[in-house]
Image (cartoon, rainbow, N blue to C red; front, side, top):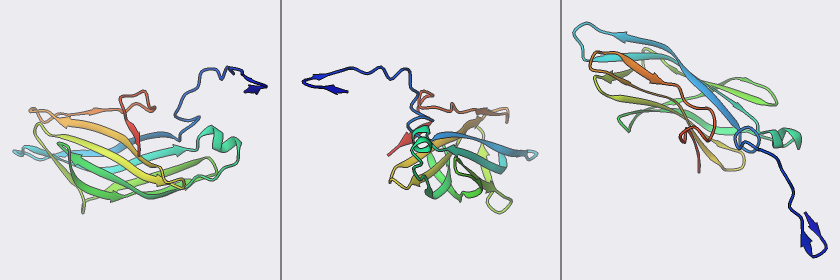
Length: 163
């Protein structure tokens, strides 16, 4: 705040970046894992669900927020193996809810010792490109899937990145 030739410091309080300044992301993978007898891999199917809430400042100032190019990219051991379109399933003035389905036709196989990662990607109406890690997990040598729930804010090990 400027007062004559002096600039006063204004206390803004504690502010979280995600939710107040940036959209708030939350998501999960909900589905099934099939183990086949005598196989060294499992098969994934189900839905990847992602909720995105407008940042507080956009709500307060009645600013528009929209996304385009919504998709889920699937990576195995760091290599992109599949891109699944994400469709909006519900929307209101504050929240966009997306779903990407892994079906029988586009199911995913994960081998013993491999890591899988589901990334939701989209671009907003201001040109910012978001990449949100929905889930990462791996298959143990005992054919046990170990999933890691993502953190839901920017302080959570970089689960949300922006270009």
